[in-house]
Length: 121
Image (cartoon, rainbow, N blue to C red; front, top):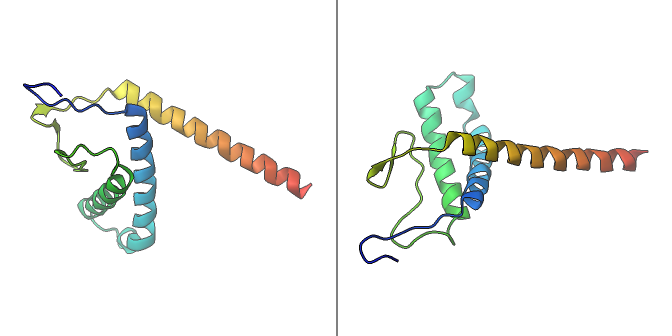
């Protein structure tokens, strides 16, 4: 730690992976527990609020070992700051990471389907 300012180091690959898994779990929760909102065409704010709450809970569960004692991870639909500074997301980096994760998931699914196909034949 620096005397004048705390420095928090984040493993970006792990954070993106955890974020993806948290969102996957949160979407499953939304579908399982709140599907009525979709069938009655519930408001976008209600749905995004529930999604944020669920994502926050799963993110907290998956990052408990990464948490800096002074800070808590938080999912907020409207927050646009990184601490006191305006947040600037490296859009191209995020898209590349998301595409890599999707490709890995697709490859794993294809391998699983090939194994199943071989078992059938």
